[in-house]
Each structure stands twice: as structure tokens, then as C-alpha cells.
Length: 114
Length: 113
Image (tube, rainbow over all chains, first blue to last red):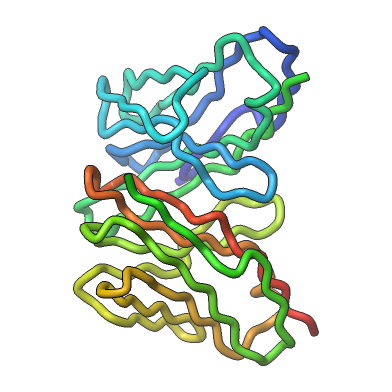
């Protein structure tokens, strides 16, 4: 299993541009999450999903959108990028009730907005 | 909502010494408390977790203790090694969701050889 994969690894955006961060997991996990990690800070939950077709806001959802059309994929959309969205973005997945609540993280996408 | 505070923000220890990182949480209904380790430039990885029905859990050199009354939990690393150097994050589940995690701000641990 590849686990949780994310693309791209790095991206530089200009203010006002849009982009989609891709996340895919091959562990058949129902639950998926998007976090952002600012330099020297902890992880803040942006959006999460408990299954295909179901998404909900986390702690810091403003400026982002998500969709979950399949169990495997959970893309994060940035509209009208702003410098405040410069961060490292991590996708994660888990299978609560499967004997563990462990969240498995992807390798991250480092985004810079100039 | 749930709030998790983590201390200290940085910790430097001599190789072989013990390291202790402490977290407090605000939601008395929280029942799951994982610890993640993040090496420089890498993804966070779970190292140990504890549930509210257990007071202590050990895994080799790593242990976690939970005090529900005081609403705090701690990570203990004994016989530290240079490869333990990393950022450690605690987390807790908020009352309104057992599968969301609220993370602390992290502790940068440096083990001096």
C-alpha cells in the first residue's frame, strides 16, 4: 500500500490564483482530513470527511473548499489565494472503529503565496 | 470548543536523560489522546496514544500518563537518544466529535549527544 499520497509536493502561487491540492489514500479509510501547519506551529484542521459525499468544516475553513466523490480521494480547493494561506498542507485518513483511531498523514504540500 | 495547550515549546536534554512533555485540555468529555512525532521535513506519525479509561500506557522507552481530574496528560521518554530529536505534538478529541483531533502547538525536543 502507498498509504496517503499528496500532489504536488511544492507550489508557488500568485495572489488571487486558484489551485487544487490532491490527496489519495489506498487503505479504504472512511475518514479523511485536511490540516495546515504554519511555521513552528501545530496542525489546524481545515475540513474533514466521514465518507463519500459527506464533508464538514474544521477549525479554519475560510478560503478553502473540499469535495469527496470517492472513498479514495479528498481534494482541497483554494480559491483566490492569499499570503495568509502560505503553509504546509497535510492530508490524513483514519478508520475509527476499526480497532484504532490512528490518523495516517500524507507527505504534505508546501504552498507559498506571493 | 476543545483547546489543547502544550509545554514546553522547546526542550533540550543530554543523551540518556529523560524528557517530559505536558499537555492540558479544556473539554472534560475528551476521551482520546494521541502523541505524534514529526521529524524535520517529514509527516507527523503516531507514536503512542491513550484513552480516558486508562491512566498510563507504555511502549518501550515511551510512556503516556493521563490525569482526567486535572485534565492533563504527559509524554515521558526515557534513555533519550539523538534520533528522538523531533517535534512532538499532543492532541485530544473534542466533545462534538470522537474522530476529529485538536492539536497542541508542539514541543521541539533536542537530544544532545
